[in-house]
Length: 444
Image (cartoon, rainbow, N blue to C red; front, side, top):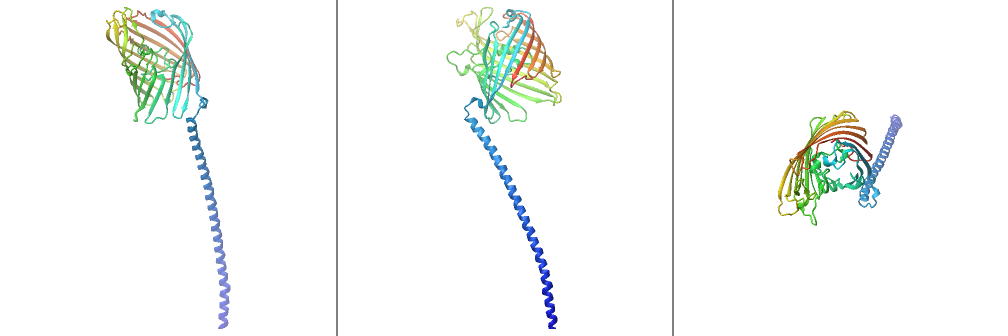
């Protein structure tokens, strides 16, 4: 019995230890595998952390670079640090008028004429991250001497980062009024500026002053512009030795825009101008009968409307524009029947007059477009003096920087105070652009 017990005990230790040894070997293998997995996970985490640190470093460097640019822009001292965009525009008019300048009141002679109407130098650049600046230097030939008279047409600063959708412009610029008053001559859809703009504004709406524009925070586009300046158009005021606030010009425009369909759009606006005390704008105005007028108050209101067809699929080759503007001028004068300034017999006289223009332009291909226009204006000194003009024009765009326009215009005078006579004229306008030109050919 004792022998059997000893044999059983020996068998237990022999076979039991062998089973335990097998279990211990499996456990060691599992621990080894788990340790390797932990090491792999640790290595992966370290690699990802390095990538995150690298990305953070690049973003911080990029942010630092942007901050450095802003700081550097604020303390820049060299004008060349922001190289301006430079462009030149040339415009030459070949024309034939059936009557002399004395019969038409034009500053160019009748018959055959070649007129370098403008050579325009454009400069524009960012002043800093908060404003841009631009200048337009223009030279046009004198009608009598053919000498080029150099002048600064525009030189203004415009904000780019004001809050509440505000934009401020200050300096010498074309104040926003109506559709075409603030458009340069070579950008017009026809050769000559509308008669009403020449009569009531004096051509382009140039002013020395400031204007602020507010894009209203509404879903529908509405823009409001208000401005003031010591002149508006040509001629300018003659304030003498002291200018009061009433001798400034105050102007404004409210405009809106509608998408009628994806291809048709409507743009319309209201404009106004008041100069409470003009102080003989244009000097003493002598009438043909010997009487004189001296302008004392200037008021002008306008309403503009345009309908445009611009197909989404073919807008580079086809479009249609119908543009209109109605103006009402209400000026106050001192009228002197004796034709002598301050004779004591002068009295106040108010003259209300109306002017308008309407045109249609159709672009039939990339190169060719054609249109018609109608002008009507009553003289701002005598509303009985009326002028009408009818024009037909064709434009051939050789390229975006080179275009030729042919235009025929018939002008008709009725009850002309200055005895002007009707005439016919043919114009050939050649316009070209070199370098950068911010406004280019605007589809107005």
